[in-house]
Length: 216
Image (cartoon, rainbow, N blue to C red; front, top):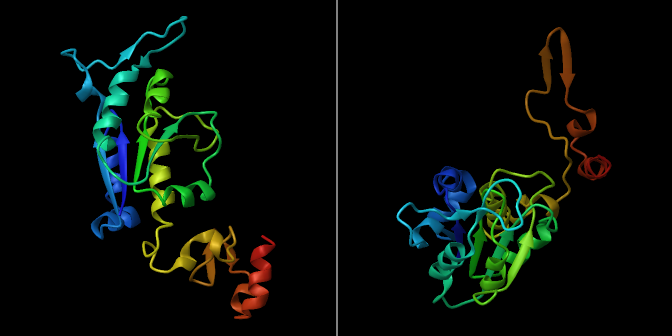
């Protein structure tokens, strides 16, 4: 079973998505597990404060290194097996299907979800004592926090685990697929116009349909 460990200040932002649909079913079938560690649980101040002003000036606040590292250490420090830390940040290399295939071969995947202006860079160096660290971004957009990219990574990796989708052919890039898809009814009438399914898809000629899909 592949174990995901999310280091996040906002477990509630992740729970609903990771409990629903394909990912939720994969958890129930024990193909994956998801656990959370909150850096606030690893601070010594009574307020649960995990952020400070950045050195050198600048806007916003920066997450402190030690609470993040201690949360990750609590998650996987004593675990055996193949472990990796995924550091999510804007500007890193784009996360791809190839990366997802590589991550599913690990036993434990730690996803570090930053907030504010980011995490003290020293955390990344410290985390390397626990496991290899891989840096990824999910798209070119900048998000409020690392939770949305982490959900994307969990989803992409989970769907590639054998048996999760029922049939391996359901993994899109392993079959001939078009970005344009259609279903019943054959004709839709809307505001005095008719919208039909392309004729080629109604022929039943699979070789020609595959050629059409490749050309889309």
